[in-house]
Image 1 (cartoon, helix red, strand yellow):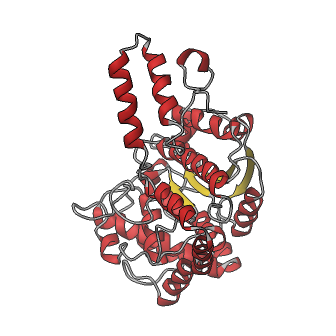
Image 2 (cartoon, one colour):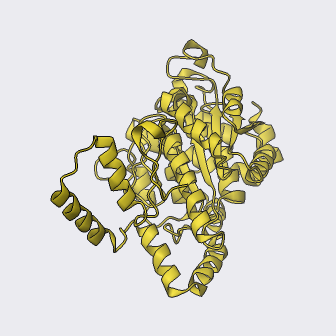
Image 3 (cartoon, helix red, strand yellow):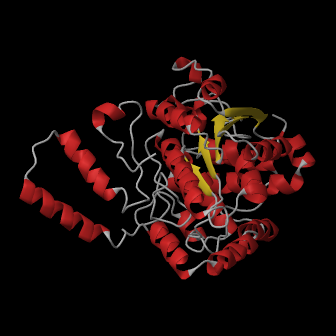
Length: 396
């Protein structure tokens, strides 16, 4: 990999992506623990995504129609923490980054939901993130059908590694996403061919692009360090009716002595090797120091979604009060007001009549009462509906 060519051909992009790499090296070294290689390898993809495509506003992290970014490869958490700090999320201060993996800090070893804004879901066990992301995309699809594009029209982006795709849950997840054509789901596969033990082929020979294609996905294969290819791939993926997997050929621990080796999966803390990597990047500031022009450029990225958010708030305000209440209740996860009375009436009826039936039949009767009231509930059966009684009369 010719780092000089990357620096020369795309200097603005390079400086922003290098900020992620440098912060990652510094934070992992300070903690003497963590994973450096993936953030260093996927910094280019993340930079293009956040700068040119991700719809978000760092000053309003809970905006309902923001795009969702999920780091399924949660061991590379410094990628996410660097992005949140650089783009200006108020709670992701430099002090929090400096306290990476320390007790009491919000920068846990793996991203944990609720610890910091911008963390959409907890991603510890590999495969969990990509499976959750399918749920996020399905929720967007259902909400868009209910509230229309004026209120719900966003993408779910995922970075997944080889470990995520090796887990069995990923197969079930990508299969249901392909079956339901969740076109607003885009997965970036960090295709670096390295695991902790060595090359991926030690454990797995799966043709991942073909696997996704067979599950009904669109697949795009790119150089994960070429910002023009990354940009074009995301643009194409956003136009697909199918979910898309973008296979990003990357170098783990790019520019470091551990590049393309299993050591890139660990904590890269050797001072001389860190200095050499930063020199190769052209990064001359001290630990945890981001040049003001680079930080300002990132903060501008964090603010560029403010117009879209303001326009969305205007569309919500134009809705009827009842429509606004419905939307706000669903987004807050609050139960429908009628559910209490409905359940009490059903319990009274059952306690008085004491019907004799199989538990699956009892389940169906409960669902028949609940589904019309809790319209945002989601359930079903892959292919056993006639046996497990999950399809009530009111469902399509």
